[in-house]
Structure formats: structure tokens, C-alpha cells
Length: 260
Length: 216
Image (cartoon, rainbow over all chains, first blue to last red; front, top):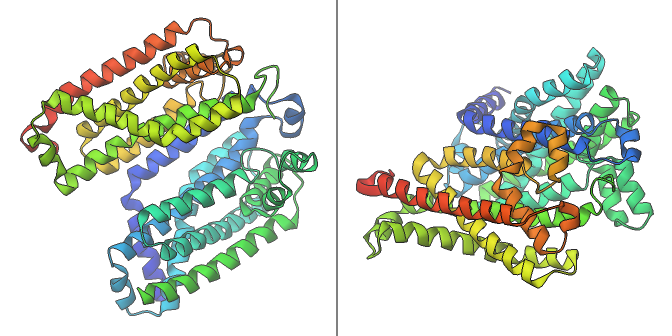
């Protein structure tokens, strides 16, 4: 346990070294909310407006999940850099088990995601209203699991790719697939309607339904806006995603990093 | 999702805006090359070449712009396919303006890169600038909607080079009914001014900053 705490401290220190980068990233996210979402408010159709009331309100929880994703994914970039610069030999020489090292990295990625996401979540609460204590706890726990899953996914990609270009390409592919096939930017019901009308492939509709980013955003919306209706499946989807990718990341980190 | 009385065909509107956003992002990349060259000592080699500093900056701006066009060429091709019919003469004028726009963005990127001297700070600034300049433009939504959402946003969007480029591209591809562009001369002059300012300011700053290892 102590070894894991050391890894957490190491990665959190590294995280705060990029404070200006984080400020830049937050300002980009806020530009999305305070410019793009406000303008889109004026453009949405009356049918969609009936479902979501305002695009600004709809998008704020999605933006929180976007921020969580971006920051939790940063750990992968660092691990990929360590691998390329062979710093991983030093990490492997530390007096701790491989499993402790791997779990420490996954957890720290998740924690970093939570830290970065906090101001965005707070902004969301300020504009949409505060949840009850129980709802707040559920939101924080589920988002933490989501962040761990994203961190695990990022680590698995980082150790499987030999160059930064390949990592960035893989990240782009994962990013665009997960974000655009989710309810982060538009309501899930809209994607389902397009699927039923044959205008959108059903496989992508199914992906959007099980996508943890959809479920994370919709869970916050269900607590703060009342739509969509809360379902335990939202939590279940995030937990399954998190479990799978934490295990995959730990396995990949231990196996691949020892081989190189 | 989008109200058809606001934008008749948002898919075609967005596809054309996406080409301009991608062109902008690709042209910005030349700034990152400046840091790469400084790290690997290529900068000294470039300065030792028998070309004036002015020719060097101009060549790099045009090279960066052309390179971004090659990157974005397939996307522009797909956009044209999606948009459908184009007006050949208008499109040639729009294409010329897009070349100037990408040269101008490359010049802006080079200017900022040699001024800032830190690749991390450059990365941050470019990210923030990208977020603001793209969102406060007509790449994703019409100017009238931006103005009605917030007059300040509308004011910035009216003088934004991405707005000029996006409007001209839509005009050139026959989407002017969506953009309601009254006079294409105004965005064309805007793009020319943007290109001229960043090319010439770039030359001056480049000359001042790089002599005697000043970029290090």
C-alpha cells in the first residue's frame, strides 16, 4: 500500500508540473461551454429543445466528462514517454512489486482526472444546481471509476505503442470514436432515432448506449436536470468498463514493460 | 437537432466549416517544426543558407501553408463531394483566398513560435487560441446566430480570419444561401490583410529574434 502511495505522489507531482498546460486546457473547455454551447442554444430545433431545455445545460455535464477523459488520458502520454526514454527501467528497479507499480499508475491517472475535472464539475453545479449529498457521492464515485477506466485504457495503449506518433494516432481514434458515439454532445434518444430510421448504423447506436462516457454524462444529467431518467445500468456500464481496463492496463503494463 | 429555419442544411454547412478548421490546425503545425529544428541544430543550418532572412520567412510561411493544403486536400475533396455542385469561378477565387489564409496562419504560427521560445508555452497558447479563434468564428455556426447569442462574440467573429475563410469557401462552393454572404470582397480583403500582416510582421520579428542565437 505504501508503495502505491509513493507512485501516487510521484505522478501527482508530475501532474502539477504542467499547471499552465492545465490552465490552458481548462480555458479551452470553458470556451466550449461559454461560447459554443451558448451559440448552439440558439440553433437547436424545437423538438430537441423540448427534451433538453437548453443546450448549455445539456452540454455542461458532457463537458465535465470530456475534461475527465482528457486529463485521465494524460498518464498514458507520460508512460509512453518513459518507455521511449527508457525511464521505465528506473521504475522497474524501485523496491515494489510490478502489480503495485501498475495499480499505482492506474490509480494516479484516475486521481489526476478527478482533480482536473473538479472545477468543471463545480461550474456545472453552479449553473445547473447542486445535487443532494447522496447524489454528489454517487457522481464522485462513478466518475472516479470512469477516470480509472480511462487511465487504464490510456496506459494499455501507451505500453502497446512504440512511438509518440502512434500513441497520438491511437488516442485520436479512441477519442473520436468514444466521444462522437456517445451522448456527450447530443442526446442518446436522437442517436437511437437516427438508428431506427436507418440513418445511422445500429452497431454505432449500440456502442453509444453502452459507452461509459454516455452513461457518465447521462447520470449527471439525470441528477441535475431530471432527464434522462436515472438507471442503475448507467453505473453498471461504468463499473464494467473500469474493471476491464484496469485489469487490461495492469496486465499490459507488467507484461510489456518488462519485455522492452 | 439543428433548427432548419436557422440553418437549412447543417450537415453541408458543418462539413465546409470543418475543412477550414482542419486547414487552420494543419497550418499552425509549422510553429512546432521551429522548435524541433532549434532542438536538433537545424536552425543554424537554415541561417547559413545563401538566402535572406526575409526569403527564409516567406518561404517557410508559404511552405507551411502549402503543406497544410496537402494534408487537408483529401478532406476538401470529400467536402466538395458532400456539398455537391460548385461554381468554378467563385471556387477558384475561394481557393486562392484559402491559400493566402493558410500562408497567413503559418506566418502567424512562425511569428508566435519565435517570440515565445518555449515549445510548452507555444503548445498552451496555440490550444487556447485555437479554442477561441475557432469557436468565435462562422466555422460551426452562422454569423447572425453568433451575434444574437452575444454581440461581443458577434463582433469578434466578424473580424476573424476563420470567418473570412469559411464564408469564402461556402461562397465558392455554392452554399451562399446558407451563409447569406452579401459581398465576398469583404472577406477576401480580410484574408489578404491577414496574410500581409502576419507575413510582414513575421519577417520583422524573425529577423530581430534569431540573430546571434536569440531564439535559444
